[in-house]
Image 1 (cartoon, one colour):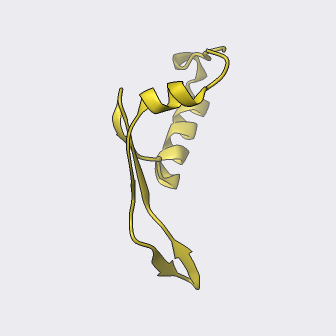
Image 2 (cartoon, one colour; image 1 turned 60 degrees about the vertical axis):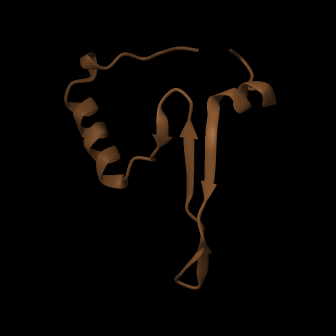
Length: 69
């Protein structure tokens, strides 16, 4: 697949929930939950989880393989 068309995106996304805005540090933040058809609710990894994965990769890069498009 080289391009995401609107039809493909509509088939991949099951539901989008937009929550009420919350005021943080004089900015409005709105939480959005995206539920995908294949994996369910997608949750972005936090900073600590990303750092842990990067450290594991640096310690043993041969365990991780690159996937080319």
